[in-house]
Image (cartoon, rainbow, N blue to C red; front, side, top):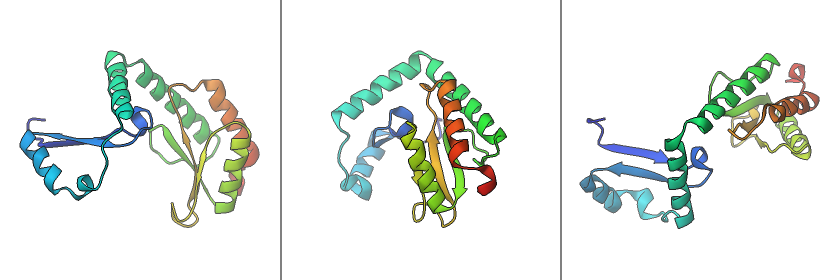
Length: 165
């Protein structure tokens, strides 16, 4: 770290789904970036509520690893279950789990049926992802219970047959 001049990060999904990010460094570097960085020149400051919430989330995460540990456990559980069911989700270990369906129409229909079942998912198709690479994105959280993840898998198996993908 003593050789790193600039740190950047996001206040996105990991910290509550807000917006914005940060750049951290020596005062001289930050002053230069404020004058020369095009994205900074045309951006708005963070809303005070987002800044405050981000600081509180950082306090919570610093005080205990309980939520992060539960998120890792939930992610592992869900990924193992969905992969053993035969759904292609890739080899990543993060809590955003894409179910790679391929067909755009099947993806939109499956996402809609899951939403009607009380499960919030997002379907992505072309042009957001390449043609024939449509997917449903599921985001696991520390707040999910195993029963909820099992319910999702049950509903998914009714709407998206592995053999039809």
